Length: 224
Image (cartoon, rainbow, N blue to C red; front, side, top):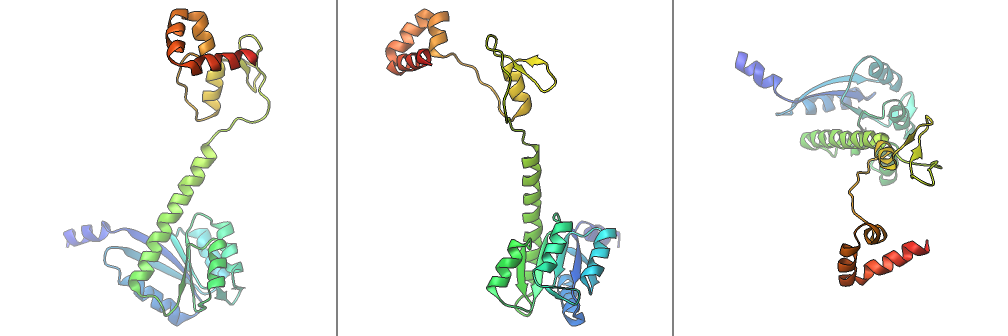
């Protein structure tokens, strides 16, 4: 008995909110989820959009399965309400309306998938849920990374002699340190032809003789 309980606990556990006013359709969805072999689904049903919102406010769910035609919310408006308040929870539309335009509008409004009742089996439903959760995970990670990216904008006060930059606190700091702190850039160091000629003239003559492009680059630097 103990070994069996351990096996059950090792299965992925997915919490599903079913927003469906038709009792027969909701029961069919629950039965389909109960047939999953390698995943443990637990589901709760809400007959109204308002009831679904109430459940989302007090409980955690991994995915939402919602009909588009509810007594208190109809059409894509249903998804807009859900996605606006809970953008991090993947949503799948389960509807009796087989219409490509509606399906496209649903996806554009935040749905991860659009499934037509009577045209899906258990494996398709479970696969859709797993894919929706994985896509939402990737979207969330991407959004978090974008928020972490620091960009340099506006005017940067720079010393005309030493090239240090004054930060937003009024302190002068090395340009490399400033850019490293305010962006994801990293530095590799080299030497430009103009500085090479001044600091290491012998090496400059050797290198520039083999590469005429270096002399052209130095000429352009002098013209600036």
